[in-house]
Length: 322
Image (cartoon, rainbow, N blue to C red; front, side):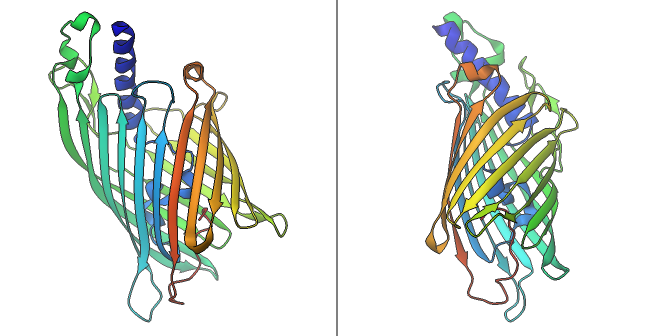
């Protein structure tokens, strides 16, 4: 049993380095409700204060599998009596996989320009720190034999910055962002394990629109594309959601990092309640070989939007979900 547990922990350590750091960020199934995490230019695109909390449990039934918690907030700001053009936001994210954990703290700033009758172009910047910790000495090796690769713990903090553009009107949106402008190279710190201090640079494209089928149903298809030059191929999420009677969301996402080999099919359901409350749940059904060992992944989201009473603040907001 020790050898099995050792191999599982070793696999999770390796995966957390590749998935969480080399590929940058956790891939959330409810990405369409989480714009600030993807693009700093999204800050201030609602008509008031927006708060969100999200929890993701990856690969249920596998011990020490990845888990993530994300908290975010953003709002518009500006001079009294004038249209609010500045957006400010921040998010805190905690990821853990096996003996590896990572805490990210970022603040975002955006400024928007009027484009046409109902459109806006928002430009954003973000900056923050990533705190990484690896408790390698907690790894139990077979027969408790000494392994130099797990003889020393790791703790370090690294700064990073991001930028993005986001255009939106009352029906559609499209965004481009580079969440991490600084790329950090692979290193080995007195061990034989090649680790990533930081992460590779990645490029994100998001897009979506809304189409009213009838008085009760609005379709909201969306797309997320991620490109990491150091680790092709391109990753993508294609979602189709329906908003029913302005209250219930039903959606499905096809996720892949290889065009002809989908990684998972994800299902979402959400409730949009009164006074800005929204609650969402997503389930990921894995299509690759790891699906034999896990029942999938689960996500839960809770948030509030506080509509502004300022008529100069309550202008066109992004159709990107809530």
